[in-house]
Image (cartoon, rainbow, N blue to C red):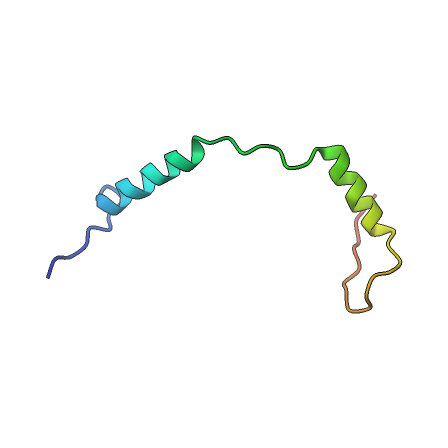
Length: 61
């Protein structure tokens, strides 16, 4: 029986390092700008139609 090489310098380590470099090579675009995100959060804090089962959102101003 062949014992797999799981050491970081082994085959699996090289494969994971190549995968990490491949994923890191593609820039991830900004999903939403900060101003829009803040507006969404603030609008959510003022919601009155929330279900009683939902936890309240408590943010410090």
